[in-house]
Amino acid sequence: MEEFSYLDISFSELPVRKIYTIGDDEYDFEFLYNSVEDSISCTVRDLDGNILFSSPVVYGQSLSDSVVDGFNPDILIIPYDLDEEYRLSFENIRIGKDNFGSTVKLFIINDGTENV
Image (tube, rainbow, N blue to C red; front, side, top):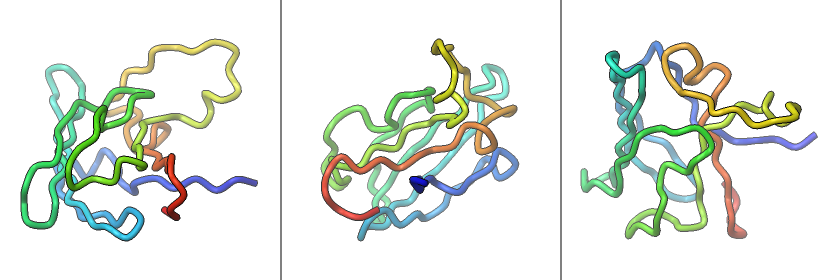
């Protein structure tokens, strides 16, 4: 069975800043919750505090949608629910308090050859 890596985080931790090791690099992730829109945003910094990128957490889309200095371009972090693999049609899934970190996880995908 294939093993998948993901960022270990749950909704109950929000708002939170956590250091994650991805490959050989460490990054500072900040997750915030917007209760009005029931949405989550993510800001990624290097360990010196420089913002590398910031984005809303959107189902099926990489958190970083472009090449960013200081972040490995082979690494994609994609919010996804593995149960969706078995459905016949794709549904637009809104990520919020009911599914963030529980059914929808932030999977780490390596498009290059490095181990994650």
